[in-house]
Length: 233
Image 1 (tube, rainbow, N blue to C red):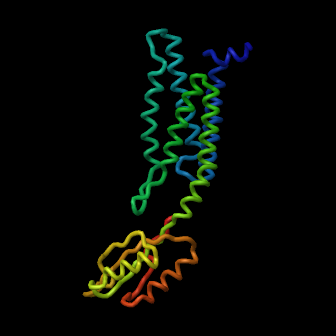
Image 2: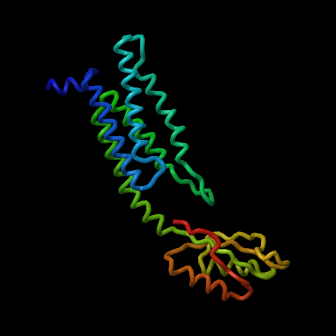
């Protein structure tokens, strides 16, 4: 019982335990992120967790030194908003406004909260929070990836002659190829009377690409067709 009480009180032993626990928990989350090759990995998560823990410990230290004249939560409260600036650096906007890095940014924010929990001696919350974050990042990510795989898209470019049959082309693309979106764009050939079409189709497997292109090229009035950008996964 004496050992348990010493860890809940603010003393030299509890300070060491809290900092080491923050390093361990932050490293556990960071290791999973490192394996996934994310921008913020092992060292970053350790530093965020230990740094957040230190803010809580500094607040407790000043409270014990100055008594009721100091608010132990004041410094830690700034971490919640301040960590957002670090998280922004992991967020990227790719083609078609596809955003990546949100999970890593949220993970950094949660890691900071775990560090604060360690600093204040909320050991159970810190450990359970780490388990939830790790499971969410590692296991639920695979389930989410399966869902994305079923909804992959293929973007094609086709060039046709004339504008009088545009409605016929778009109806055919939607009925035969299940096109999700069709945009009229300037012709890449630059020839007068030609019209460019950018077509977004659902993609079930890699074997579908050649068959779709052949069907599109065989359509009367289509001059040529090609895959015009990287497939979304």
